[in-house]
Image (cartoon, rainbow, N blue to C red; front, side, top):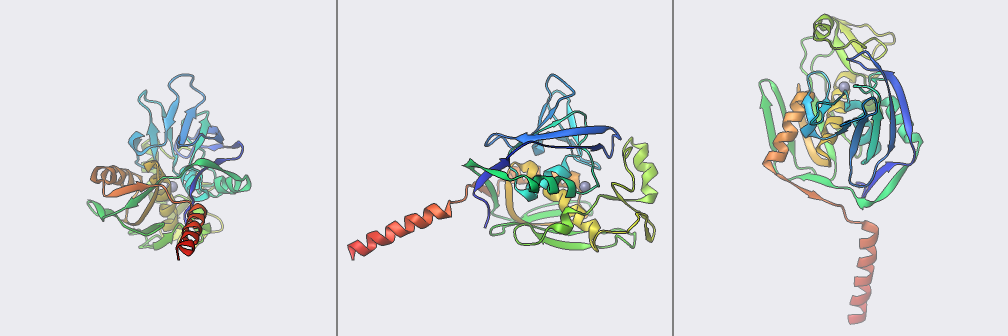
Length: 307
Ligand SMILES: [Zn+2]
């Protein structure tokens, strides 16, 4: 069953590392956040207008990573793997202070973030968590890319399929239920690219911090990283991780079955905008089952008296 109350960190944690695209080293310090405030980024290298909320409306670029930007043009990029860690561990509210423009890429997955967040206990807060429950199928088709969501009882399920000409990546497919499945392989799956695309990506001024330490690089029939892949479906598992992180930008935990074909950050963002336009969902706060059990007991006692 899903969690009832919002959660935040019990104490501060920090990370340091290189940014995948900027190539700049940054430090982040994550602090407990107040109820109902969500995930808030704060650029501590700037002293004005430096707060950026983790919300889908603030996504201004989603080409190869998700970039958030506030009304003053202050940006934070590559937020998705940290957000995925928050999604998976169960953090609802946090303040992320960062001294540069890009969240460190760490090893290209969410593993390091999750390891540290799991070590400290999360703290239950007094407000209930808000869930967005999908009522009707919503679909977005963009050329060959497709994403849809359908109602699902009590969890987020992601069904993802890739379609690459490259034989190693190929048509990898996986279905993950974020409530009931073991997420270890999803969590540790790294970002990836084709060797032949590296020059092109760099010509856009991106991937300046990219290396075999933080990305899987595939050259034709070969994975160039020592040790190869971490799991058989690492490519599609990473896309599932990205999608979970990007969905947290809705501001809610989503209960629905997502099916995605060849999607990415940009498609997910367009899709979130469509979901909120269609309004084919409702937002609810889960019942406190312990409390309702007590209530049922009282009702039964009443019945017994009446009988
Ligand atoms: Zn990613």
